[in-house]
Length: 211
Image (cartoon, rainbow, N blue to C red):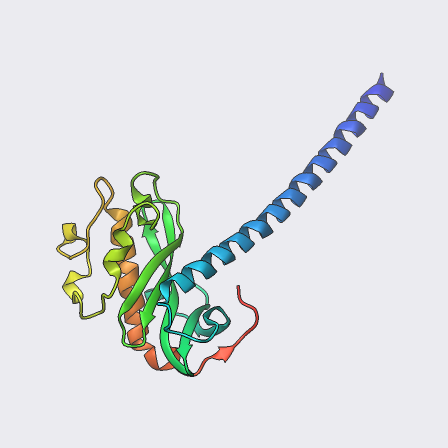
């Protein structure tokens, strides 16, 4: 009887060890695939923000460090991607976080021309409510295009809010928190560019690897 119990315990223990090992292996493999997929999606989004013919370098491999938790919403340095044409910087794509989305942080890419105009905004990761807050995805609505060609002066300080708060940007029916967070984060990214324009547009270092 005791021998049978011991045998069953050993079998169950071995099964548990094997199961945990398989789960850990699958998790690690899946985690790496997810990270690679996110990098690819981010790379595509960065290039989509840059007008054709506006650069002749490899923007994904031309980076300058950016860091300002208050204006960019990130607690660690992250690269900004610089587009150049004949050696002259023409645009920068900043990585920003809207920490106050309805369901958590919203990760953004903000393209800014050397003159300080928005080339566009893209959402690369979020957990907003499907059918409501997910309209910040370009594939779900054209709302993000409302940022195109905007600047700090257009619409001006008071205009950088959703219309419900007295600004010039639309909110979503039944979902104001999400667009409010994206508008605020985009405005702060423009402020960051304005304050750090010289270093962002300085001749950047070419790199071969990035996150």
